[in-house]
Length: 218
Length: 218
Image (cartoon, rainbow over all chains, first blue to last red; front, side, top):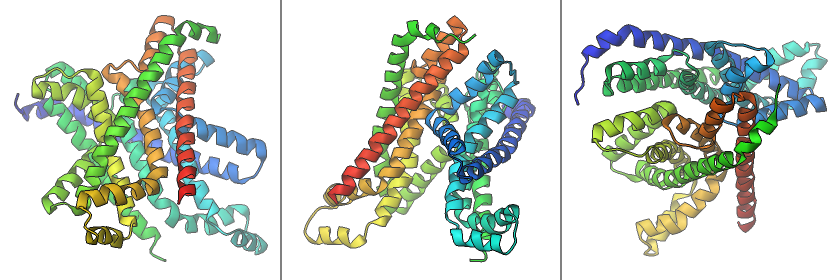
């Protein structure tokens, strides 16, 4: 068994195509997850009991079941209720819905860290609720929520590999295909592991810079 | 139409699958605990070369997707070693190595939280290095890290659904097989999700119980 770099020339375009799909999935899933998380955290802070209960149940279900099942429910069970999604859409929506529950918990902790008096004072001074959110709460929360948020983004980056099971042609799928076609094993998996490791490493470096940036006024 | 009575004939296989899920994740968590503890001690007190190696190990297992690690151990290692590794062994082994990297980071934080004077005092009293670790440090570390450890165990329980990809007949794979026979995707995946939800809730409850018990004995 030997390492044959010429395989990378032959399969370069296929691997690159897979890598672009991986980047596309994580670039769509992460903002979606953050948005879902923010919406859930805001709904929870409205203190309407039925809404709160619905949000808690959602978070409990998402955090208590495997991502793989949630993706299967979206992809294979959607058609029985008339929702037919292609693999990439189901995958991105699933990652967003899943990550959203984790982000919601991060944001909730952030909101709870803001003293109530500040919010009341800001409202007294005539700031609208939107201004209170964007000018008072979020800037202060950032220091607290950035490290766990970066962690969650890294988790989502790695979870895009699971989309290969839904037949999304991302990097893992491209590597599995290369194994099947060439029966070479080392080359595809080295490329696969290295690409994900680099993505995760790049994300965590960016995250550390972001952490320093949001903490610069402290 | 949804018809959950279709699930009933598969109640027994599903239960056996759930048992397999518990066996796989339980074995991985316990093995990962032993390896993780050794890694964290090595990372804190070992020779610089060993520290480098441990850091690389942790970086690999935390920086690449679990699915990629499973594929590598399932297809790559047998070809490399020239031996046939049963799917169950490679599944448990990979999950254990994966969680050991995450657990090592958890334990490292625990060890750092303990005052160094304790270890010095124990050594002064003539207690051996390993005995001091085993009898004095590790019991306190375990108490400190119980909440993140419960989280990690829950995460492994859910991630064990991925070993269905490498042909281990646990809950996820049993459900997939039942779906391929009955074409009742929604019924079976919802049932499987609920079983996972029960298992993870149970695990979280046990973790909480332990925490309370330990808090009382302090």
